[in-house]
Image: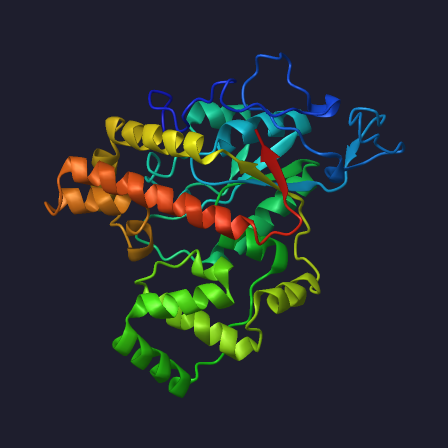
Length: 350
């Protein structure tokens, strides 16, 4: 677990981003950094909100005991999540696909022990990094944590930036379609003739939300995406969205998305990656590899893939830092694209 000597989040100055909170969860001081205005859509009350005065409702109550706070990597989810959890008497449930791994603390920006002491956290350090941990595994762990919170009368705040976790949390898992070998072979031939990027561009026209999460050279995932589209019979984003929206949500949680200006987000990513390497991600990676082994999934995470390459003598330390910054910026871009598929999301803009 991370210590306080190397903070998991880059501090946000009030001059960079300032969000407002209603009276029910208002900051104690106007100097308090990175607070959020939770809009009236998240509340119900005996009195209707005046749009010119969102504080006008008496004794507002959350319309749901479950809220999702998400945003691109390095956008400030941890700090903001703790503040909201404290105001709402909520437990924090992590929705981060790297934070589930033991020993991978620095690269996942896992909350420090001091941060965890400020609000109860769940779904961290679930398995060792050599393990295969699927979205189904996470959903089961999340369902158990939700029940635990409700049994104790606690509200639930999901904090994290793994879009697939959040989509499946709300909508459930899609049934996996059967494999059509002829269709798969035709896709394989297309890739052999035109390369994976051409097929990825086609996927982007059909399902930009899915294409944004897949690297243009990841032939396996590109093919699987087309198989799912073909088997489901839904090949247009609008039709897919209508099919999705007609389903009853598994956990109908309102979703808040932190929307940092790109220039500020890129600066924060730069600062975070520099801090990761200063705080010892190389040593952490080597220790995790020796203690547990690092499986294929964990080894693809930004920062850890580059650290492993450095440890194996494949790249220099500076190359590892540069590549991590580049991949993290790409990840943030994909996340923002995916978050736009949540039609009911509330965007928290500076």
